[in-house]
Image (cartoon, rainbow, N blue to C red):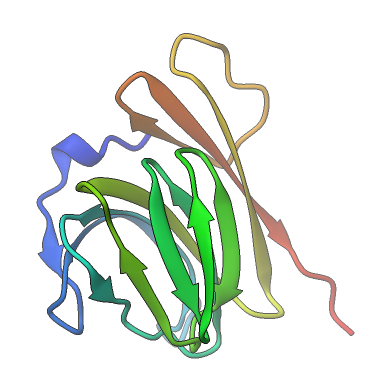
Length: 145
């Protein structure tokens, strides 16, 4: 059970926002294999890049996301997938938060299921508490080619 309210925010690598890093898995050499975090989005901002990682972004409030020049409007609970090296920016009407699950490309893939915090968890590697919601995160190993 991961509770963002128990983790202090840290600045984004690019200085344009803050995140609460909840859990990270690394390999023997220290490379990130997966990371679960919640971003505090309080202004329009570009995202930091994370080469070789794929991102599953779950909007917790309405926002507009631009990924490599393509805009998409996301409502609360909408999800978007994109490469960590993509050029990404967010435009907000009001401050909100977002759940981010990053996975090493070719090693893991993430799935997130949102549910009422009162509903039971069926299957998850981690559960993130998000006020009245809970996000069940599954980390699925990608098969070797």
